[in-house]
Length: 170
Image (cartoon, rainbow, N blue to C red; front, side, top):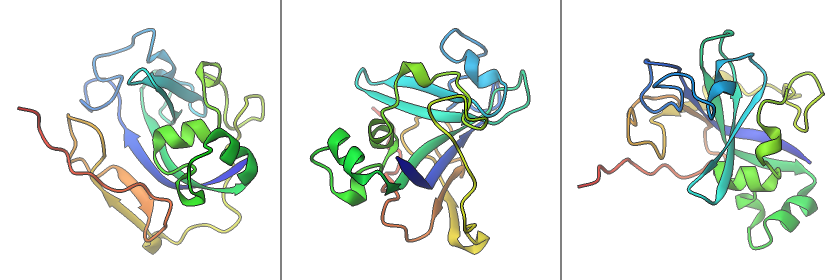
């Protein structure tokens, strides 16, 4: 299966980003975020979904980019099997749906996404997205640092997940 990424979200490391899994330092769960760059950081969320990031910081410095949404461009039938009730637009629209479409699980955590040895392979697009077609805004689904404009998406793309403003709990 091949996916064209349409939306991502950035997270910094220890002490610098309270929305990051690595904010309070290294733990067994987030150790992958501390490097090397180019590996997948997969995690189970809400007891139901697998999401994943690509580690992008220098060794020892936690930083990652959450893959939030994409368009399935090859292997649509396989994605439909994995997400049988979804429209093609929604096959990988949102981080949990993207994880399900790509069959992300614990075995992906810590594997390379750049050297061809892992189950996922990240490659540059055949046609780069013009910078003026990329929008930036607040992150989604985080309680802390929700106003940080580290969510990036292709403007007007139908597979980008909808923005839901953070509403503090009472």
